[in-house]
Image (cartoon, rainbow, N blue to C red; front, side):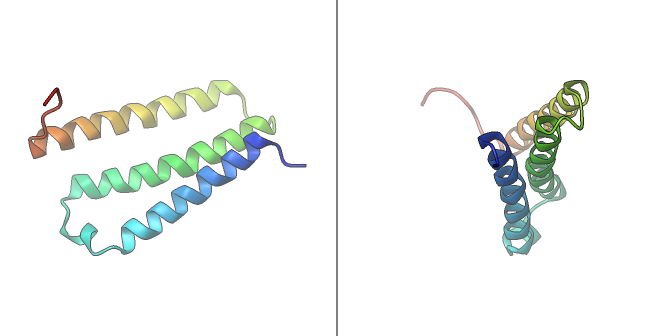
Length: 96
């Protein structure tokens, strides 16, 4: 029987694939700059890789020593790209 963690892993993989297909097929992507396109691709890849690594970790095929650094690298890269995009667009965070 498939456990809840494995179902979540499969859902993350499926969401990443659907996200990439929808975003890459949309006409909005052609109008975006390269940084936004890279950010979009990285978000989809992040979901897919998180799902795959979580699945492999739950099956005991990899160790947490591999899982954690890969996830942190992706998370930090996404955070830096998000900050760059928000700064570039002039979006101000804070109370209104």
